[in-house]
Amino acid sequence: MAGHRKLSAQQAALLAVFCASLTQAADQPQWGAAWSRNMVSEEKGLPETVDPATGRNVKWVVRLGTQTHSTPIVARGRVFIGTNNDRPKNPRHRGDCGVLLCLDESSGKLLWQLVVPKRGPTPFWDWPHTGMVSPATVEGDRVYMVSNRGEIMCLDIDGMADGNDGPFRDEGRHMARPGRPPEPIDPTDADILWLYDAPKELGVRQHDGAHCSILIDGNVLYACTSNGVDDRHMSIEAPDAPCLIALDKRDGRLLARDRERIAVRTIHCNWAPPSLAETGGRRLILYGGGDAVCYAFKALSEPLPKTPVALEKVWQYDCDPEAPKENIFRWQENHREGPSIITGMPVFYNGRVYVTAGGDYWHGKRKSWLRCFRADGRGDVTRAAAVWSFPMNAPCMNTPAIRNGLVYVADARGGLHCLEEADGRLLWTQELGGDVWSSPLVADGKIYIGTRRGWLWILRAGRRKEVLCKVRLGAPISGTATAANGVVYVATMTRLFALAKGAGAGK
Image (tube, rainbow, N blue to C red; front, side, top):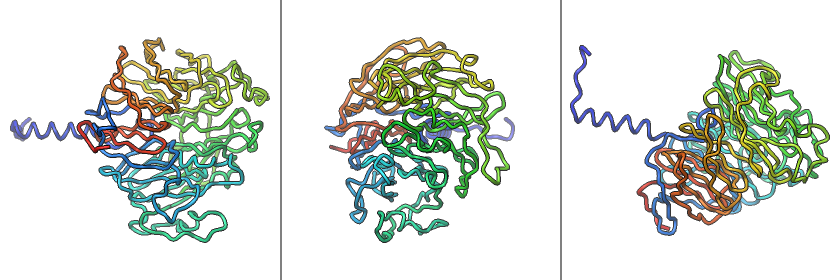
């Protein structure tokens, strides 16, 4: 083009390397690929074998608590992971607490931590030693988080190292256990900017623990509330409390809530984080309810409401229309039949929604499905929008991964399935030899997935099954692997592994 100099061969090569670095290495600031929640990554050059015994392809390993169910999140040179406080990073923080660790991405060194005491009045509100199970969501210099107490928080990414920025300034009291004086604050503590206590403000009856990966859409945060059953698992204490809410990300002000009374049809709890779809000129917030119904709500737009409003439902898709919808607790502990639940996130891809639903892992039937349906329509689209369905003879807590015309999903009993995206036809199954709570991550032509028996599996992604590596990491794996900046992060119950091709950190 006139007026532009032709690049030299050396300049062109440098530019190519620079562009490759931009496209092949990136942060992973939330769980799943952007707002669609697809379990894929664009990272390249990731390891296909790992040997913790020799340190081969192990960059670093950090000791966590004794129970870690969260998924690692990577942003702005930091790694965020939730765990418990059974192995305190700071000796002045004692007792059973949920903990969010902020670690240095290059070394795993602790930068700061959020420490949150357990929520009462019974252990079923915040199960002992479970820790902080919600993955963080990072945007700019803000970290958005759902604590083990069900509080939605906005944290300063630098913690207290740059002072207490406020407007929330009562971190010392918030860290203190009931009946104890406020804790002293030091630079390794989290800086809470604002806090919204959903159980207190909305009457939510949290069950076992709070689990949500916050979805950001403009100035709006969307979060599930973990509204669930009572201690006996035989009734819903808060039938009118919302299961999905929207807050202003700038100050934590409540903007909207669902009015669907999802809880009354929930056999256990509402733990599924929301996702977003854009189709037919509409922006939809997708939510997988504890009643096995996938809901689409109209996304809030500017100007945001000044007082809280009801989320406007656009459509709903029942993932188990034959299941009982009333008096559901008579089916509690029935492993052959009964109501279903959605635990994984709905994935929006090429105009379709992919979501798993089936019997509750702990109390329900041993059956589930991966449902594929169109994201258009209005009202009840259960019949009109259906495309295909894949049955599994076990519960499923997975969020699927969709890549190159293939769908990968694992059932909770350890079957990893590869399906045709077009019609759901099964291509292959790999038995993983242990229960699976995590979701498969597809990155760099490989599938990474862990089991509750502590095995990390790495398989070749594609229509032909090929196992590349099977290695024991020493403790059960609950969270999903994360790929960012050329590194794969895998959290076991007790350690966080940073895995990089060519690294050798020793044992």
